[in-house]
Image 1 (tube, rainbow, N blue to C red):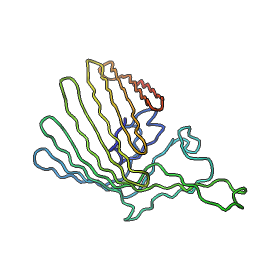
Image 2 (cartoon, helix red, strand yellow):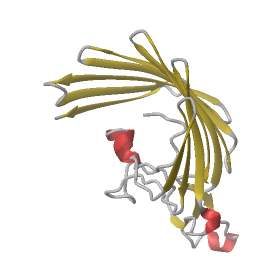
Image 3 (spheres, rainbow, N blue to C red):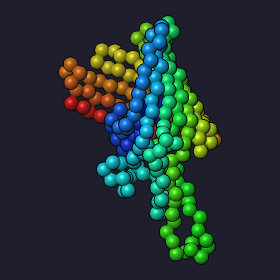
Image 4 (tube, one colour):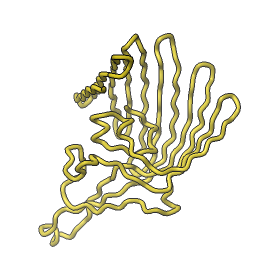
Length: 237
């Protein structure tokens, strides 16, 4: 659910909160090439020629309760279709012993906009509705992740460093999960650092029934610094 290096596909925020990250990814046109190297290593490159922004709610974008835009008029400036607006990146994956690992780099645009107030003169201020410039700044990401198994537990970690229009930041996390019969549980800790450090604790559990044709899932997220929590339950048949 929380993958710092998952930056290729934009997401629909409402589906992310209510259904999960896999269902929330929005499709984009891309060109991908792979080179298979010795020792089970792979070099993968991706080019995204046309920008697509994320959405707060595909059903009713302007009145979505998840929308974070300010009140007022919005002048949206999406990156146009041109060579200088092409997004792209590469990833190297390999295995050392029982550890799968990868390193990745990406150069692209923020999928959700940054809002900047449009300055007006004092005479116009009383006559106009506030107007905001809606832009999608470029950013660069360098990331790495690993995954391994220790007994019944699967262990994984991920780290991403971002450099763009906003202050330089990084996000990283460690997690462990295991399967026991029809149950699967996972515990994760995610740390992000920009102007200040924030820690998010994530717990996840799933129970399958009737030869895995039915399932029940529970996700819980807790932020100790803000003392906020989010809980989601999904029943699938």
